[in-house]
Image (cartoon, rainbow, N blue to C red; front, side, top):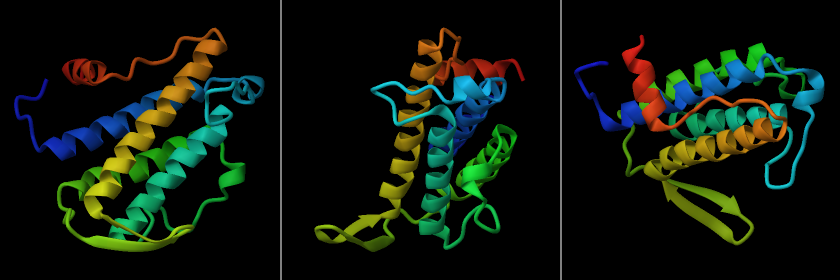
Length: 165
């Protein structure tokens, strides 16, 4: 394990990238039928949930940096799981790169149904972490419903993975 604990926010986004990669690496081996499974209590099917999660990461990055981590917007409806792994690496690496350097006090205004909604960069970063955890949990639930093992994605598992590198 690394002796240097590093910056807290860097570690949190390194964890986010690790968890996204581990989950997608498991999902790459699923059949088309398994990827189509839906259950109440989850966002939706596995692949569209991963697309939603990664697309949101790109939107969070665009909100903070002004650009997406990938050049052109991908054809989200036609991506293979291996493409999603590449996109997860791009967005996750970019979040690691910018998170601790981002001014948390920068304010944003966006139009919402109830009028203008104001929030700060710290809110965007917090939402990026929460959103990933929420959807990874839903996908783990779907894998369990399929009778498949899911990767353990707790912080403890991340730390353990660091000791085996």
